Image (cartoon, rainbow, N blue to C red; front, side, top):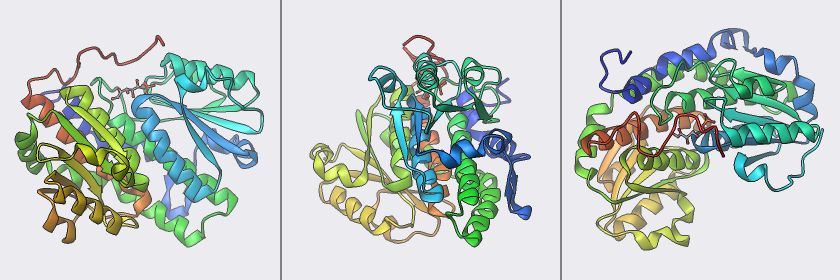
Length: 366
Ligand code: F6R
């Protein structure tokens, strides 16, 4: 059941170190320099010959697809396009046997995603599923696939399904990179060893819970929130905003940080909390200047930073630390505090966290 937690959502957030390990089991063999996934091995030619990969999904799974776009392109150098399943299915998409379609779905029952799969199959594409529910419609309808081993997700707002989706897709990206020779072997091995450390780093990220609770108390009555991130953390910003909307009913928007000046900056005043995902990586200096721009307009800044960060700490109203890791792997870590932030804000607002109004766990109608 809830295992002593007040809500399934919180239980599922805390299960992440374990379920990520489950998702690695038998697949990530870092000491041997291997990634083994039957669905990929058996169809490796399909992936290697693909002119491009199209990823179709909805909601949170669509955000995992965006992360996958960045990792697959970066590691395996295969062009990736990410599609909302609902749009893809209705616009006579250009897709043929030289394409691979990856469908991502926790439930494996989402009507639009299922329809996208059927369409892609009709047009001759090879279709690969990333599902959590074993034996689900999508897992049966795809040519091959890889399960996320997140276990049952009861909370309507997706948490552990998202981080395990990213985990599986990162393994796929690295496996393809190895086969294509697009990553130097030393880099490839470095990522394998770093991946092994992800569960304990997620555990460490969870220790920020008390700090996040305090921040939640300050912002629980906000009416709007902006989430900003760049690169690998742009999809994390979208996911953070979706989570807050879904369970606390606070209006939230996620943006790539650099887009702020193209519109959303007009919204910023002393009533606007801005959650900035600012790990110390490639885009750090650019994100720091975004933070300065927000501060100049009296916006309130909650920053997710790498442990030990100094520069952002001086500017931000609140900081939440996550352990350091290579940039491509940061989404799994930076997502954790955003899940907890939404959770605490929703509980403080007395919302029904596990069953938010108007939402269903699997969307089997379009
Ligand atoms: C978000 C959420 C939804 C689902 C979406 C897709 O917390 O629960 O946005 O992510 O309905 O569902 P699946 O992954 O089951 O296809």
